[in-house]
Picture (cartoon, rainbow, N blue to C red):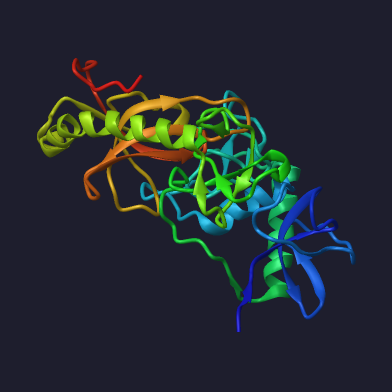
Length: 297
């Protein structure tokens, strides 16, 4: 029987949280952090997540890039003799958290931090056995969620989140998802209605554009990282069967995901998706910038 992956922390309300399992009553984390005081915590808390556990989660839940994966890659911007890094599947990101270059490397020296996380994961799998990871593999989309304000002043009313800033559409600072909210903040609701109207206006153009996209012959096709996306690109990524046509790309503050507004032909809708800046994508780009790409100010 597989063990469910849970969040563990010393404090039930704040501090650092880790991904792991309980073997009987004994906590086991994916990053090899050990403390007998670690205990299960709820999903939507104000904890900050251990960075090693964040990368381990990507390793466990991301499918390999359809164009193939390299066993080792150098860090971005380094030479041929640079230290080799273990790449996270579907990312140009090392186990250690460094951004990686697109080429492979034959360097014999492997990053010690990458090796340490690989050893921690090997130990985790050996001790935990089969683990159940609740992740459906779809593109990350949280614009339909309602969020709780910081301080948990009001958990009855939920807020819509602006991905680029992490604040509510009403500019309220947010703590985390609030699935128990029964009401929606009125200013957020008005802003969300305006946003949906903008997307509806752009939908016919994007629908027509996607319909003849595959007949184009003036496309550059390449493998690249998400933070290099431009409006007008189309991309595919591992774990999702859909093609995505890019309207806008918002580069948020450091440490946050890119906010990418895309048209998804399979669903016939315009949605905002979150992408890790180092996510590895198969990108198609027109040779010349196109006039008439809808903008949503």
